[in-house]
Image (cartoon, rainbow, N blue to C red; front, side, top):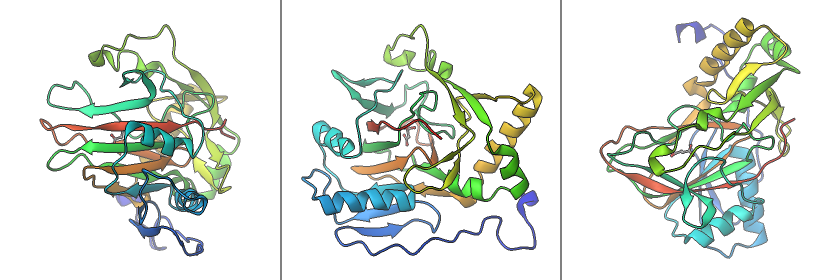
Amino acid sequence: MDSLRGNNGPRYKHLAAEGAPYETITLDPLTPIIGAEVGGVDLAGPLGNRTIDEIHRALAENSVIFFRDQHLSPDQHLAFGRLFGDLHVHPAAPHEPGIPELMVIHADKDSPRANGEGWHTDVSCDAEPPMGSILYIKQCPPKGGDTLFASMYAAYEALSERMKAYLEGLTAFHSGDNYRGMYANYGVADKPSYPTAKHPVVRTHPVTGRKALYVNAGFTRRILGIPRDESDAILRYLYEHMANPLFQCRFRWRENSIAFWDNRCVQHRAMWDYWPHTRSGNRVTVKGDRPV
Ligand code: SIN
């Protein structure tokens, strides 16, 4: 990290636009760059149009938003997700019986792995990757099990102008092959094939118009149109750069909390530091558009 130090102030100078005040919800930002806790709303609904608009705006302005003390049935969790678009079905992960849109997020002392242990944005192997994911944790370990979130706007904006110019127009190949065998412990059989897609290395968010880095360690196999060794080196650099804590917030779960992140501009990473305890919940994922 010494290489990040300089004499010109912080590596990333974030200037947030002053938003209009919220009227139906409260907002408590975790950092000036990413993440805010939303209060004054019961997501079990029904939610008024004004509240729904303000939740949309809170997500656009903060990239990931958190809600505490929510008590949702599976149907209410699904209904909340549908306020933001059609629901996505994960190509590999286990789901609650008979509800493919309700993904299981669970790790305990016998788990061979936990979800999301490496930095990632969800399912970028899809041609139209999910816009957002709504994770509802119902059982928490006594300590630990935090999730880290990183702003891919900040990661992009902190690049040198030369690097931004270099990345402009580049496309990368994403593959879902890493799902092979991943959920065998849940009895999920592998599919004959998983999705693949080509996406811009830098995407423009359809709502905010801001540019965000969009390469994804578990899924991006290579940047197209450049030599393999160059692609490997650039991806390695970008993954290291994206993981700078300057771009991050860290959410400490309590039971019945919800995190709603925008996959178009956020990566996340879940800490499995609570073994042998159990952490458990469900994720509802909202479909998105083709990245441009
Ligand atoms: C995920 O990647 O969806 C899981 C995140 C978490 O468990 O905190």
